[in-house]
Image 1 (spheres, rainbow, N blue to C red):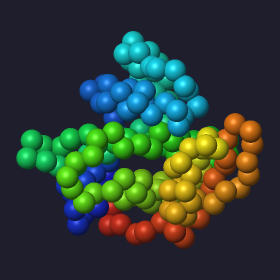
Image 2 (image 1 turned 60 degrees about the vertical axis):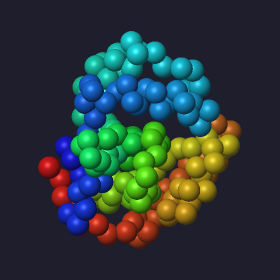
Image 3 (image 1 turned 45 degrees about the vertical axis):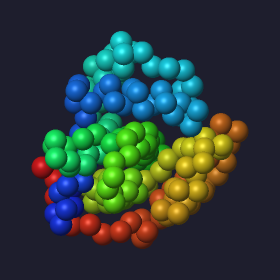
Length: 170
């Protein structure tokens, strides 16, 4: 699956495949201080996750964010969502590579949130570590703190804050 704004297909979300998982692993390891799992993920562990946990789970959707360059599309970040008992949980939102473009991760993130809102019922939520500086970013995009526990802060997206894109899904 590929999700993009019809007015600009040079920036898009592409459902991950086996060829993308090394980028995800490297980015997650580089940013592990902001995630619940604090240890490095090995290549074998990443393949195991992809084959035994991600692929068979129809309720888990992970995307690479891609920008078009002279060499074709390049993976620059990732993000995902999955169904949970409390709603649709957005997770692993991170930029991996910064290119010299004007594309922003918030655009990709809000495109994904619009896709979720258009295609699924339920709240769009996330759990964030209390010390994660991305909390301010989530709040600036319309995520509202619902409650705080020792291990995480729970946010729910105010769907009225989702900008409207002319999305196409292939």
